[in-house]
Amino acid sequence: MTMQLHLNIKFDINELKLFIEQNNFDKIFILTDENTSLHCLPIIKNFITEFYEIKIKSGEANKNLDTCKYIWEELFKQNASRQSLLINLGGGVITDMGAFIASVFKRGISCINIPTSLLSMVDASVGAKTGIDFFGIKNSLGTFYEAKMTIIDSSFLDTLPKRHIQSGFVEMLKHGIIADLFYFKQLLQISFDEQNDWNRYIKKSIEIKSKIVLEDPAEKGIRKILNFGHSVGHALESYFLNTDKTLYHGEAILYGMKVAMHLSIIKNNADKNILAELEIFSEKTNLAKKLAFDKNEIIQLLTQDKKNNNDEFLFVLINEDNQAEYDRRCTKEEILNALNTIHA
Ligand SMILES: NC(=O)c1ccc[n+]([C@@H]2O[C@H](COP(=O)([O-])OP(=O)(O)OC[C@H]3O[C@@H](n4cnc5c(N)ncnc54)[C@H](O)[C@@H]3O)[C@@H](O)[C@H]2O)c1
Ligand SMILES: [Zn+2]
Image (cartoon, rainbow, N blue to C red):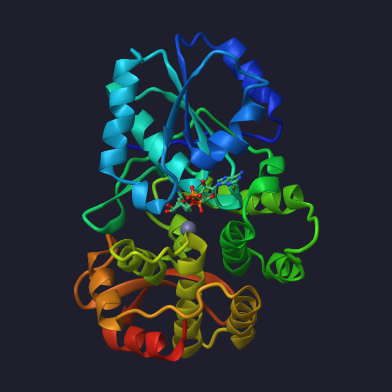
């Protein structure tokens, strides 16, 4: 089956009203967590008056089947039909899980993503990947399902805690490393204590991601480069899912990118400055610091990764011409060596 993406991304919240006027939905549901219900829903209420809110507890720990079951039951209780609309109002947990919910409810109902965290604006809500965590493994259940529209309004970021801004920022750094080093260097100049023109950077990141996913929607080839830093990153997230310590997605990915950069230097003679810049960024933000974990368990979790088999691990690495390469084979020893060299 070939997959086609539309990437209907709008930067004006008024589009929401227009879209609803143009479509004949019988009911509108808005999925929130306690933070987006408090900070973001009041803004949406200016555009939609009749809706049913489904509110869940925030955090990655709730991106699971139990929460899905609760949401599906709520949809049934409120008589949602195939003509209903689900609006996912929140960070990546809400947009990933909400789109997953929509993709299987009565074989698929329409959904709209309104990302409210920097991470979901630049990454999670663009590209049609949905998912939840299952069996202790990140995003192990999911579908490809595109929201009818993604509406980005950076004013939602005004209430987002700084640490979450920094977590989302890591995905933007990733876009820079894999596709545009000039952009990477521009991003490194940003101060988190000042007002920033986030729209400009969000648009640039979406431009990079869109170009890649449009070329390879089903992730058979080039789209894999967007997983730079995510092999070890996801393993680390799965590891911390099973503990009581909270690790944000961007933190895990920052550590994963440093490991991937180390491997790129060893195997590909990649530019050492990129790793040095990532180290400075970690120091400055204190992201992905003081993480204690069992390295052998990380290797064990890597073998569970959809992409790997037992002896060889496929990584996205950077080459000496600063190009990202996917499906680069790394051995267990090489990875253990990188995990021992890069300190969290
Ligand atoms: N589908 C994809 O392609 C893709 C890509 C990258 C990441 N992801 C997923 O995204 C998730 C991480 O996303 P995230 O960091 O946005 O997580 P999140 O949804 O947990 O949001 C982070 C926190 O910020 C709060 N929040 C969100 N918007 C707010 C606002 N405007 N004001 C105040 N608080 C607000 C949330 O309640 C939560 O506590 C992970 O599960 C990851 O796997 C998916
Ligand atoms: Zn990511």
